[in-house]
Length: 128
Figure 1 (cartoon, rainbow, N blue to C red):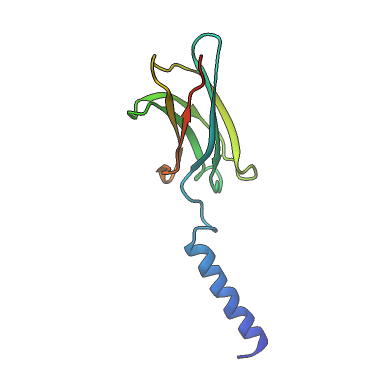
Figure 2 (cartoon, rainbow, N blue to C red):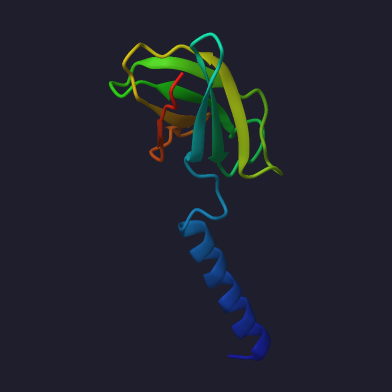
């Protein structure tokens, strides 16, 4: 094999490897960090840092949710546009009403193609 033929073969192998590991295509959205801050009215503001390979309007992380430990939806933050050049990104949702006695919430992200990502973060709530 000539030098240029060898380089082309190696390049093709690298492209296949990158594609098969999902580096070329967008994957499931992942919440990589989250925190909660109490508000003066007894509610919380929850911030989520999300990583997702947004590719444009057809495939991007379009919301994140704050759930109780039983899976009950407490709040949803809609994300109205892709974050192609801003990864990871952090957004917040305020006014999250948490039932009395609840000590933790779960934060998960959603995208337009894969639905809910499996990588969630459980947040221990600070005292109100």
